[in-house]
Every structure is written in structure tokens, then in C-alpha cells.
Image (cartoon, rainbow, N blue to C red):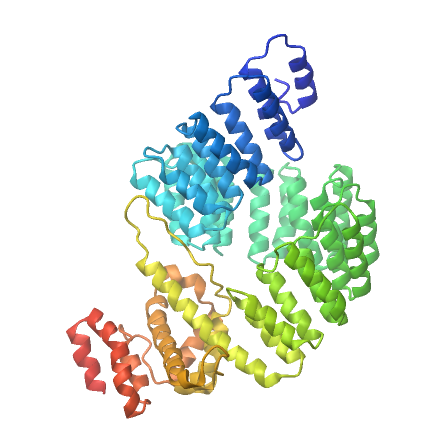
Length: 620
């Protein structure tokens, strides 16, 4: 009872007075510490050690609580040792233990280990499938989460309310609106779920993330019951879709219906006040937060700081920060951001130094922010020290951090260091490519900046083609096949087609500088590869431009660039096969290169059949 009420101290008093203690009260104590979380995770390990020392007969629930504490604390090493202990004691056959292990490995970021535990189970229940789906969602592997949901249904298991609330945000993040409507239909068909408020809120959130706020509103206003959570979901939807004024009005309508905005609602709507610079409403919400005792909460205080900063009242941000009893790394970073946005870079540097002296340690966001400050102030020595801390904390692999380092060295005139950081990044996305282009520009090397931009174009096209192939070729059938997605950034897709649509026409790839790792004697081969990427990207576009599932990849601007590219090259946008376009490009090739080009096209022609081969040979 005391554990369920969150009073662990009273529970411990009752426990200490017990003359005989079986495994059950011990497990209750373990569970209480797990539920409370935070620093209590350490006490779980201490309690478990006491149980082993006193010779208590441990059961699966004892180990389950222990593993859950490791999952909450991301204590991978302790979890691995416990996994070994489970094997030694013969507890690994329990579904409860295996599900807990899957959850722990996912929360520690070890997807492959979780997958391995899952694959060792012959008969899986819906709880274990739910742990896998939730784990993929936790690690931002949306495609895998949806794929495993499909496989679970194929095995004859029904989706329950827990899995529904897990996959709805995933569908929104993947912009899979068609699938979202199918799930919505399933919810309506299953009357039990259609009445549950948290599922209704999940549907509103899903439609909002898919950009369909109209459908989200229909779900919200079609629901007979509402609460603060569903109102907050609608407000978040308005914000996601840029309807900021409507989001502010909704908080008034919410109160008119008799619902009080909770802590999450306040933290959601405060950034809107900052973006719209509506100081009056911001102060009213501040007063409401004080009245309802929300201010000890770090997230609300942090949002207040950012709101006042956006409204130009930096001194108010500073007051809120100084009045915070409990700060975290997010609040420290928010104070730094407030000074940076106001142009007070020296003060931002002072906040960072104070944070370093406190018990809080800078995370990747804070390191990225201070790197940008060093670049703007041209503090090369301090920038190198920050770089050393980033390497020590193993944060250099974070795209945002690595991009800021590249720009920082470029701003300080150390372009060689900037290039070194850039080359050390194994997977280069939009942030890092943009950073190196900007670094060359800041150092005055505009020609090299243009070359880097053109290299970036070819990379984006190649990544697009590779991902499209992965989507088309990955096995959707068969139990136990792991689906691995590549984290590729598509935010530069529009930029990739601009040079073509702006007049480079068919020879734009010849302008791309030869990379350092390509020998001069291999230049002809390199040029051919670049051309090949362009040809294959046409195939991608022809397949994707009319594909409903690919709609999120193509904005109106991207459509404009694609259409411009087709018009400049006299290509028919509605031709079903892209192979003709390939041969149109080949008209520009010298006779000596046409033989090699024919070898390149042969696999494509073989796949499409004789009719296309005859048609395309006629073009030559």
C-alpha cells in the first residue's frame, strides 16, 4: 500500500519491523524504488545485494525489478553482468525476464542485443512484441517499429491499447498518413479503444504530425469526452502546423470548458508566446504557473526563460534562472541560448563556465552552443579546449556538435582544422556538409566552398537512390529477418536539384571538383559514377514523384526544381520508364565512352525486358 502511494520511507519502516521476510516483501521494496526512479535506481541494486547476502530465494520478479532499474539508469555494464547471472541460475526461460532484458537493451541503445534476445524466443506473446515495438520507437527506428507491428499481426496476435499508443506517434514521425487512417479505422471498429481518451489524444497527435490538422480537429471535436491531455495534444498540433494564434486561443477555450491547463500544457504554450512576442499573454501564463505552484518544475522555468528572452526581456530570463532551486543541464543551456540570441556572447561564456563548476555536466547541445560562441568570438584556444572535452565525452559523432566544430574552426581561420574535423565524420549529413561550405566561405575560400556544395549535391542524390533501393528491396516476409534502416538526411533534396534546374543542364556533374581520395588517373571513372548517380536519381524521381508514400520527401519547392530540371533537359515527366532519359543523356557522350555506358545500362535493360531494350537501342 505504501509503495503504491509513493511513500517508500513508510514502506521501509513497516519492512524493518517484519520478523520474517520472504521474497515477496523484498520484491515489493524493489518495485517501489523502481517506480520512484531517479536516484532510487542505485538503492535497487543495494537491496538486491542484501537479498543475495541473506540467502533469500530470488524469483523472476526480483530479477525483473533489478533489470528495470538498470534500464532506467542506462546501466549497460550492470545489465550485462545480470544477464550472465540469469543464464547461470537458469532464469532466462521466463518471458518476463526476456521482456525486461529487451527493454533494458533498447533503453541502453543496444538494438542488436535486444534483437538477439527476441530471436531466441520461439513463442512470443503480445507483451514481448510490444517491448520490441516500443524499443524501436524509443531509438527513433520508425520503420522497424511499424514492420514489427505488421509481423506481430501476421502471427495472429491482436494489437492492444498499449501498442496502439506506441505506434501512433511513430506513424506521425514517419508521415505515414495512409497507414494512420488505417489504424484510425481499426480504432473505430474496436469500440473499446475508440472510447479511450489516451488513444484519442494519440490520434490527434498523429494527424498533426502528418500535417493533417483538419483530421486531428475532427477526432478531437468528435470525441464525447475530453481532458487536459487531449486539449494539450490539440494545442501541440496547432503549433506543429504553424497555427500559433489558434494554439493560444485554445488555452482559453480549454478553460471555458472547465479544464485547467496542467504543467505540460503551460510548458507547451509558453514557446508560442515567445515566437509571437506576445509579452502580455506570457506574463499571464507566468502568473498562472506561480499560482498553481508549477515553477519549481525545471521545464516550465526553462520555457519562461526562453519566452522572456524572445520578447527582449533578458533581465527577466536571468531572474527566473537565478530563482530556480533545482537546475539541470537544459536550464543552463537555455540561459546560454538567451544570451546568445541577445548577442551577449561573453555572458553566455560565463554561464557555461559556471555550469562547468556546478555538479551538472554539459551535454551535446550545450557543447554545440559553446562551440558556436567560440567561433563567433574567434577564440581558437578555447575552441580547441572545448573540442578536447567533446572528444573526451564521445560527442563528436553527434551531427550538430561536429557541424559546429567545423564552423568554429572556419570562423577562427583554421580551415585545415575545419577540414580535418569534416573528414573525420564517418556519415556526413546536411548539417556537416552545410558547415564545411560555410567554413570555406568564412575563410574567404569561395571557390572551394562552391566545389564542396557540388560534392554535397552528388552525395545527397546517391543517398536518396540508396535509400530508395533499400525500401524497395528489403524483405517484408519471413520471421526473424532484421530490417535495418539507414539514417539519411533528406533536408537537402531540394538543394540537390537546384543546379540542374538553374541551367547546368546535362553537364552539371562535370563541374564537381575531384575529391582528394580520388586519383587523377581515375577521374574518368569518377565522372562516370557521378553521371550514373544522376541517371539513377531520375529513375527514383519517376518512381517516387507519383508515389503517395513518398509525398513527405517532396515539398512544393522540390517539385519546382524537379519540373525545371525536366523542362531544361527536354524530358517527359509522365514517361513510365526512365530508361529513355538515360539514353538521352548518353547522346552527349563521346563515342569512346558509349561502350562503357552500354555496359552500365545492360542490367537495367535486362530487368525491364526486351521491349525496352529495342526501344532504347533505337534512340542510339
